[in-house]
Image (cartoon, one colour):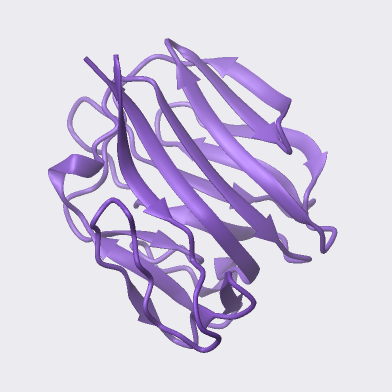
Length: 192
């Protein structure tokens, strides 16, 4: 197996910058007041996000993958990463959220929610990760297993429009805009 880096987005740089260099080569565009502050993406919960256009290289399919990011927030009921919730033939689409109680929530269209049990909206920075290994999906908070479930299936990105960070953009839901900061977003997939 070879690990393919799909997104490698440190979200660091000069304060106020709206440039988001991605080591995977993707181009990210800011909406609203999304900008770099203190070497992290700052979103104020009122229409701020960054997005990159879809391309086939973002497909997760049925392979093992890992999605990770560092989050600091006191927000809840919000979207961290959105790739649209409309069904794709023979597959599911997915999103990463925080629940009303501040728990990490992986959501996909076939299986619904997989919620963690650790509160992460305490204003401290937390490393959040979701992994697929075979048919086992796991949510981690700060390197500790927080939830897991067995799920089979294909995972796709919707064609088009985009992968977004900081808001539910593709099925626009302003009430789920994220308020806080995000850094070190990385998505990897295991390829043969």
